[in-house]
Amino acid sequence: MLITLKIIPNIFTLLNLFCGCISIIFLQYKNFNHSAVFTLFSIIFDLLDGLFSRLIKNKNPFGKELDSLADMVSFGLVPSIIVFILLKKITPIPFIEYSAFFISIISAWRLAKFNITPNNNYVVGLTTPVNALFFSSLSVIITNHAIFFSNKKIIYFITMLFMIFFSCYFLISKITMFSLNFENFSWKKNKMRYFFLLISTFLLLTLHVIALPCIIVFYIITSIYFHKKLKQKNSY
Image 1 (cartoon, rainbow, N blue to C red):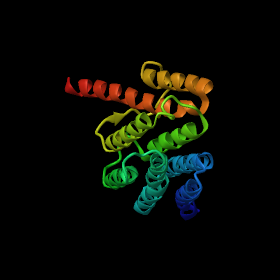
Image 2 (tube, rainbow, N blue to C red):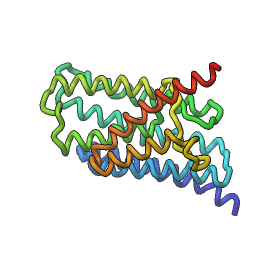
Image 3 (tube, rainbow, N blue to C red):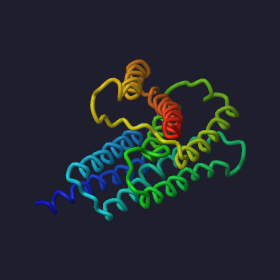
Image 4 (tube, rainbow, N blue to C red):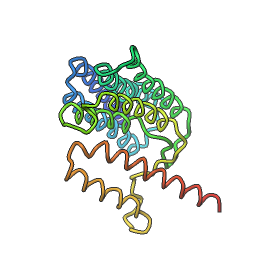
């Protein structure tokens, strides 16, 4: 029975990988909507993998390696392909669209570093699933909604390059990202979490899919503030 339970997190990991592969297939046909749906499934299975591992207290090195390999496909390769396709149709500079694969390279670096880093109660740098969700939701917005820079090729091109740079930077940054895990429900200890969830819920209800990249940017800004407060606290 115990052996069967230990297999379940790995099954979730493999489902994460499967959905990542399907997402890539849809990207080949430039079907960003369906690709985003399967990326969302990958994130759900990745969360279930971690949740179930904690529930059964499974610290299996094999599972950790398998999880990183799956994440590399679902959350490392997928965002790079998205940015590659979005850049390719508007780039004024030949071959510059291949810079999108810096996201994959830095994601691999982050995942390898995670495998040899002791587990902490906090996250350092932007996680690969959050990064993938940002670009997946952005691709849906760009292809389905009229946004202010989509018809201005130079602005669009420069914005995409900046997004590649900041994505790579935050993936391996030493910024402590605040956790959404509630140890208790007291207002005093969870003010930032409640504030973040309240703003995020409001954005989702008003902006729908457009809210997703906004929430992620808001999460990064909130985490930078949290990081500064943590440094000040530790310096006393």
